[in-house]
Length: 164
View 1 (cartoon, rainbow, N blue to C red):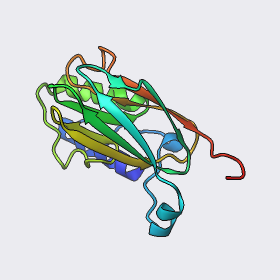
View 2 (cartoon, rainbow, N blue to C red):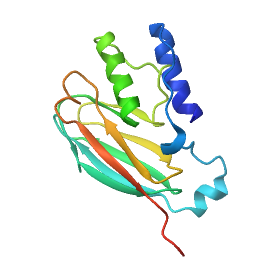
View 3 (cartoon, helix red, strand yellow):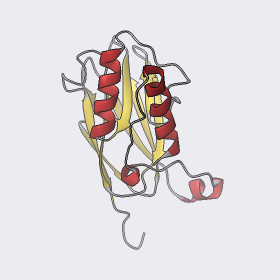
């Protein structure tokens, strides 16, 4: 289990008196602690616009094993959030949001930029990660009505190219 992601959910659910949610490690890896490894791997930058209740593009592709920066620009007058996680993580956060209307995400619940960010109206934010394996995951906004209205995008993690 990715320790940063697990710690994020454990802290938020502890406040609710609920057990921590387990998220499979197949989709997540902590950013590399080696500066040399980070410099050696080309950083993938993914530009995302957050509209009133929609992310654009709707689907993005990244390569497993390379550092990724999701740069999110909020082009709307509404505040948003972006949670990077699989279906299980998205459902857990949706339940958390529903059980605590009007909650704010404090630094002790989520570490900004590592799987979760809040994005002020007309603001910008980044999520940085490195995916360890190919697969699919989601970036979603769980402010009231946003996720249900389609404010999510699919991240497709592809295998590294052979020979390069």
